[in-house]
Image 1 (cartoon, rainbow, N blue to C red):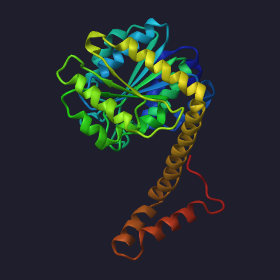
Image 2 (cartoon, rainbow, N blue to C red):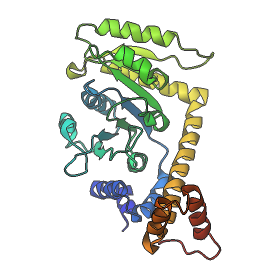
Image 3 (tube, rainbow, N blue to C red):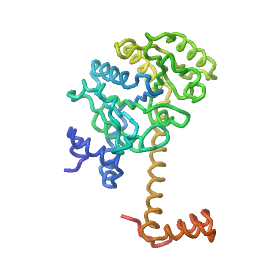
Image 4 (cartoon, one colour):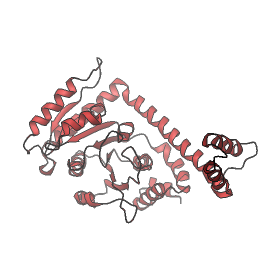
Amino acid sequence: MSLAGRILEGDLRAAARLMRDLDDGFRSAADEMKQLFPRTGRAFILGITGPPGAGKSTLVDQLTAAYRRRGNTVGVVAIDPTSPFTGGAILGDRIRMNRHADDAGVFIRSLATRGHMGGLSRSTGDVVNVMDAMGMDVVIIETVGVGQDEIDIVRMAHTTVVVSVPGLGDDIQAIKAGVLEIGDLFIVNKADRDGAERTARELAAMLEMKQTKPGDWQPKVLMTEASRNCGIEEMVEEIGNHRRHLVESGALERICEERSVRHFMDLLKERLFAEVYGHIRVNGRFREIVEEMTSRRTDPYSAVERVIAERFAAGATPLS
């Protein structure tokens, strides 16, 4: 039986193996995803982002527990820094979620960024789809951090939660990074620290300055102490309010359509690059082009036009 078939029958080992194959870029994983894709589109995708040290992993752990108490199954995709030794994910923060290890209603997968710009790894969308097909009600994506270029999460999640913490100058960073534009809910975690209320007030004041239209979602600022499970239920309630807003306003359908467009475009770009680059690397043309460019006998623009024309000329055989 295929991996996809075993996954649909509840085989967790098969799911873990397919996620590994997706992360490693194995071409065979695409055939498995073709079988799983019709079973996706049901999970609610929740993105958790914020600067390192904001307590995102502890918050995700408490959110997972809160959703389980409500009877929901939960998938967690935790994006980690890339290990300089193994090239895989550094799993330091995942120890905070160990209490869910024996819960069949929770599936946790760590992924390394592998240098991918945007805050998420290349395979994140596919791994989310596998969890969706497994029947997870909620899939939580925890990013490695947030910055001006790390906003992929808002393009993948239905609800994006931006986590802040007092004492890191986040109010200023929020403006610089533009995170006010991506958050559907703002959390000031570690609310027992000095300055927490001031951080929350400043965030709320900046949100009030945003230009909005009638009917737009108005993000709130909530305070939590994830380590003591304080404020988590209020957070889950507000996430639910945003989900209802998405459904009732029709925004959820638009988000799903935009996600489909990006998924197709990303796969097309990846496949076209592999098709063209793989061909010229195998037949030696890549080395020839580099030498011609180095000696200024050709320019990169003409070289690209030439290899594309050669590759897609009538009768060209695609790489297997």
